[in-house]
Length: 194
Picture 1 (tube, rainbow, N blue to C red):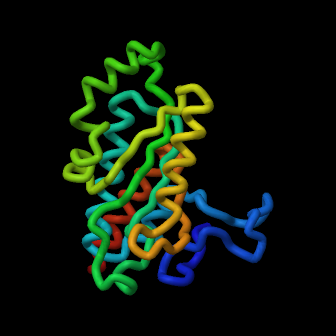
Picture 2: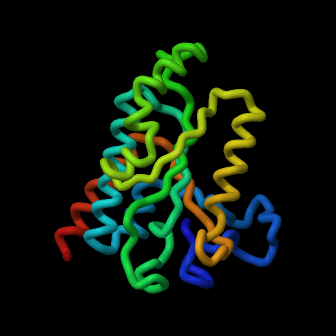
């Protein structure tokens, strides 16, 4: 379950008083389904458009062969920026931590795969313009040290607001296709009430 907003209208980095976040205490990145993300953050037409883009992006990644991994969701999208900043979010920040498609097993094949898509799904400017997703990738099939270093980089960057340096939490979405259909239906249901 996603916690309520804390100080500064952001998701708290942890819940409770134990900063080590023992096994039973919730802490960032908070696991959630796509349906839960929509349930919590689909509160306006702008947010609905961003969520539709995220759903399209996830679908297109699957069409390119990605099927295993998860995504960290962050940025002003998971803040109450309408109250804190006086504006809706412009996009959603995403780090896609995914295993390579099964048809791309060797490093050479992976490099070719990335180069063929370097100006589309691997280009944050392109994903932002086409899906409202400022997306970055972590290849979970790299050597473990590289995965750890890249993950630490993104956690360090995304665990604080850029302008206030306030410590904050983020959301972890599994890369499960079955959850996306219900999320899309919920967006439509919400839009019908605005």
